[in-house]
Image (tube, rainbow, N blue to C red; front, side, top):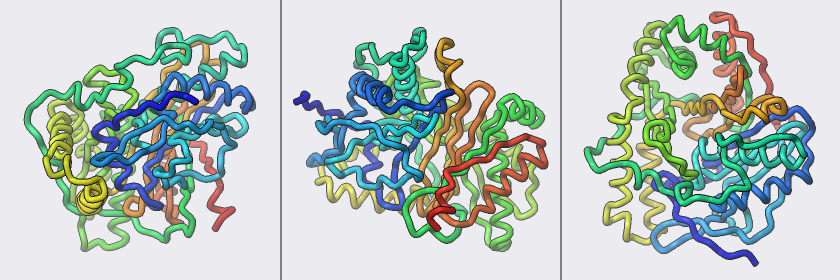
Length: 427
């Protein structure tokens, strides 16, 4: 029997076990498409090697007296055919499951991870290492080239570091505003999975359009989403004005160098109450300014300190876990998601070794939607292919169709649209 090891959950990861339920799965999925059909037997070997390299991923969730923690999962790990749905795993407390799944479907390798283990960037590093291990086992001439983790390397202490604790220096704390935001509405699916809509487009084309507005790709897409949220709000009730707020996760590794494979991400919330007649150009100006102000360590660090301060409060540190869960859920349900309209998480470009690129086509990043935010968005790019992945748990698809319409008609951006086609099979 393998040795049992315990792993502390980082400051951000402690939230997810307390708030997870059937409508808030707290999982995310990453996928890579290769240029051949995936061999599940080779993928199984690659998975075993990669999980050994990243032991904190091969875990199950355990309850302590005061906090959750991770423990080595002793049950054998098995790769599985990819299910034709996403976000159905809502019981991370089940001791018989792993907190990560590895799937295969035709030319795609996918991983689905519980957020207490890591963030999107950490998950992508795992997928990159898994992909490298798979290609190597297929006897292709590939190597890490010193730019990604290698399954043959030894795990370092820095990879298991809680960088919130290690990198954030003492100083001023600042709590984010918590006014109730505008939310999309619709009829929920009777089942608990998500319908996925992927929009694939050219990175260079997006850059060209974004440049005309003096925006990054993130800024352009945020402006489009915010504008369509405004149109939706105007159509539903033009007299009632609520703030339209996008939550945009920011990888803190860009500001404070870290190789941690735990969560090290902070969110910036952009938006405001927009008058009914607000133009797209006015939204662009607001997004440009707020992104510039929000994406700085001077702005982000005080918000992180506020989160850490809450954890350290005597009340939360020493009350039993079951009481703590009720407190966290109550606060989160009042001032967490209700203050946000939609989450848009952009992992940016994926960097892979040059020796692997001939075998790879594209990457995808999917985040779960919730009852409060029934549509959310994950974005990632590789080479000249950027993929926007909308997850949706409501039947109404007009919001996503309107985004496609603006990108293709207004900006003349060619888009390939595809999805899991699960909705049509299960409605």
